[in-house]
Length: 130
Image 1 (cartoon, rainbow, N blue to C red):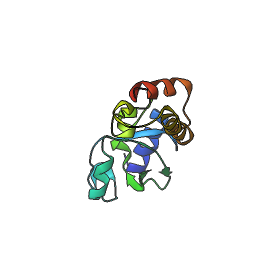
Image 2: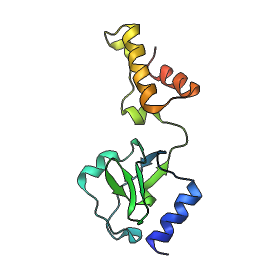
Image 3: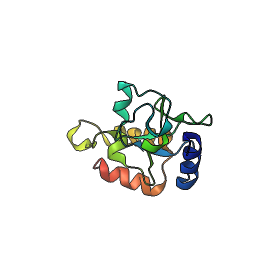
Image 4: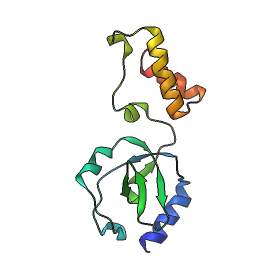
């Protein structure tokens, strides 16, 4: 099966769409699974981190995450947002010299960027220990 056919099948099976949250699971190599792009060292920083699927290359060269084309077979759709991975750290406001107002401003910034629903706001509040 060609890369183009395999990617199309994967997108349908996983119901993967532009704007979905995804995680790059591992490094890939040119030619692996008929993928024709190159893996750059800078792409390694996305492994294991939750990101937004920016674009699906319908010429079937890959999926655009963080400005790079990744092959579909290293992309995992995130059904529930993994805040530790998304933020890369576990934020603990108790160790910072911030006021409740400053903490709420930070939360509102997250809300405007990530369009949080009520359950996600609760999860984020628990994560940052407010």
